[in-house]
Length: 344
Image (cartoon, rainbow, N blue to C red; front, side, top):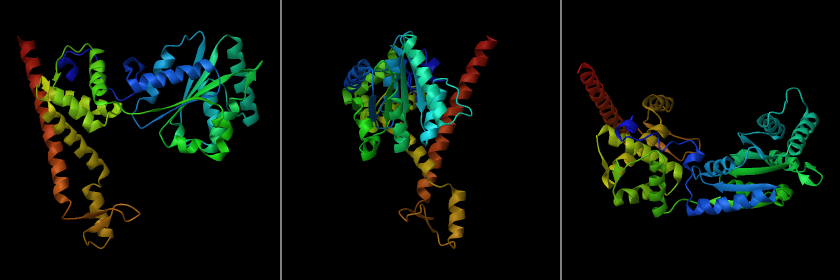
């Protein structure tokens, strides 16, 4: 909705990774240097870790987008809780290798034949494993075994392992010593600084032909960094809502007060999602003998008091209703203006 109001040619703050919006911050440029170095080694594993939303997938996606498809073939595996054999099947599927009805031995032969055929055709095979922290040690060992495939002493597969910080603890497992020895490059993506947060926001806006509308005050940029901690995905979430809020209120400048207001609204919405609803609470209280005090988790670390938390829930509901009212009001105004222009 706000793209037309601000005359933008697209959505600048989408949450999904998009290599077109890659921003070369100091940390991302350094990470790119490590990744490029690892790629030129042509073997083993390249490990990139970072907090949720730090830009790991976008970074590697940007790198792959720069590669010549006549020289490289890349497959991406977004992991869940996969076991060893399932991991092999997912790798095969990602490369388009048939795996129906194949046992492990047959599957490995098919994968090796595919990788060898790709090399003979003049291309290198790359595997990107995202959310790698979800893999078990056995599954990681299967990936390590795939790195053993070679032809005439040249490795047939190189892998990128992208994961959250806890993957580094997994990698320290004694059972993964051989995998660690094959890591050719490793980097941890940190958050953006205050100046780079501003540059990041302006970079994404300019990619959709932003002409300075809406304007952001210096204080607004500072608050965005303070609220998001410089994490790109959090910046995207907040800025997307800032533009929506500005559109609903017909605002052409975003200042510190607006950032605080929208950040508070987002915080209240998150709190409502993570707080049991009235029906859940009523059920739990009834199950607890109606004494107005229930546990929120199995460890006894949280509680709900029927009277003490009620003002918080009322406040969150009121905030949601205000947001809905603003949206409906603005939509009706747009519809009225459209009908008026159509009649004329």
